[in-house]
Length: 110
Image (cartoon, rainbow, N blue to C red; front, side):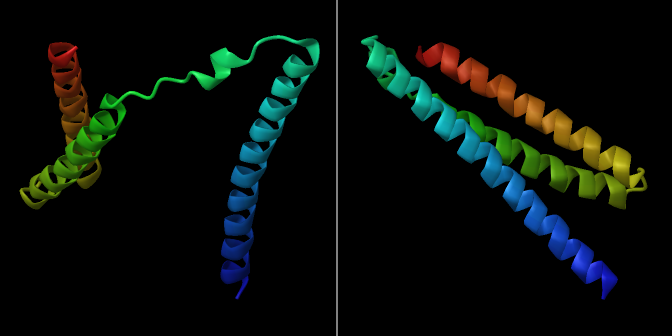
């Protein structure tokens, strides 16, 4: 029973910390913008945030690279390599390869 209570408290604490950080960030940003409006400073630089179409490609390729790394780590651990070494090395290897490929694709299309 003590482990369950501990797990619940840790989970609630983690979610509360994440919520608190996001709340403080948003409230601080709102106060800054309101102060800028009160002083008459233009706030258009905040509104002109450019969203990159390649950001989703980057995260997608990274996710696929990590998934392939996990699969290859499992294969290597079945062939006798240490589990921690095989998983970590393959995840970082294929994650890095996917980010390099993403950079090449982004550079060619720009």
